[in-house]
Length: 100
Length: 493
Image (tube, rainbow over all chains, first blue to last red; front, side, top):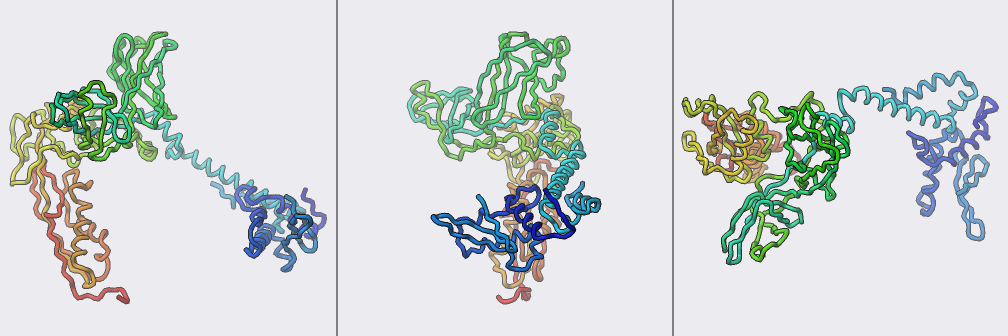
């Protein structure tokens, strides 16, 4: 559950908040649009900019990210042989592999 | 009513009690923030719901309240069948006969029932009147003898609505009595009502109080009429056919839709019910309130082009006093089918229409008034006197408008509002100068821009002629448009 050990927000908290965002689809909370919509990035052209839109959404939904410098959050795909493409979210140096 | 923001403000005020959570709240940690936000949203919508409920008894917003209100007033959702004149022409060389109740089918496959008998000589064509409904018979076995025993009426399976009902059992027919008024114990009557789920019931009476209670095991037969209401709209000239051929002479008949007598009406819709629910009571029109026979005729025959019902006082202002006018009502009517007698204005009122020349519609109006108040003598009919009101309009507009267009526009706008088929002309109408000015300025854009001049003169309308039908027609309007040298306020062209 939510436990904040000190009175400050640490990188651990940012990591926790980002994982929270990743686990909730958009609209799963009543009355607001909080949540990730990463499924909409699938099967679309790279240059559409949807990945950037998702990062913008993440920054809106989890306001802590606005305190991090630009470039601290990035979303990219890694080709794993034989035929997998994994999408990875990198937050301030920590990699979060996205399941599902 | 509390909004979502109110609840969030409450949470904000209380978060100070929890210092560790307070840090996360101010950093807008999603795990904490959105949980609280969604709870606030749920409470806000619940608050809105409660707000509606508090006033629901007075404002009747919800569908379920409106339907329950309608059921309580005794409004039964029923459709009025469409009535058409069908021309039956006999192409053979023997006389053909169509009886009352003969089933016909129209071009859309809807069932119609002939309501007049016709003998058609060979080579000739006779008009018969047909109504769009079909009758289905249901039997119901009484399960126990209880007071006010209800029998539900089944819904139709083809999207048609209830439009008529007759109830009978082994000993004969039952009579319809609305809410058991004027019913003695032992009278064989039934009453129709609807509940708030639009399920319609036939109810019988109470032994020794009013009506009869059916005995256990009795079989009740319901003959239910279903009609498509406004959904039955054959086109003029479309073919009809006999549903069953019962003799060789039937094959020779060619049936075509000739003219509408009455349009079909669907049952009352939710929005009208919602309006009715705002008023404290709607009486059921089995008597006339405050002597408003005009309203009664308008309500029963909603598609008349012009109708006026007046009493002896108005009659004596028009035609002088006479003892014949005592206890008499008078009526002048033109229906959509236009079969009634009309005449043009020639300086004075009209003379009474003899009984032989009355159309079916006029006879129906007579029996409708008799059914509500038979203390009056049979309704006397006068032919409607057509009076196209002479109107002179002079308009001066800026030079960049085309003359012909302007005249056409003025005539169209005025015909739509005051013409023969307009809603205003259904009653006695005196178009005032103010009315015409405001209709023209509202309906025609060039009167609102630049410098325009409009002069209207309405001719004299004869007074004291209650059967006068005043309307504007193309021939009665004299419109001139002059162009003045005025600069138009627009730029460019």
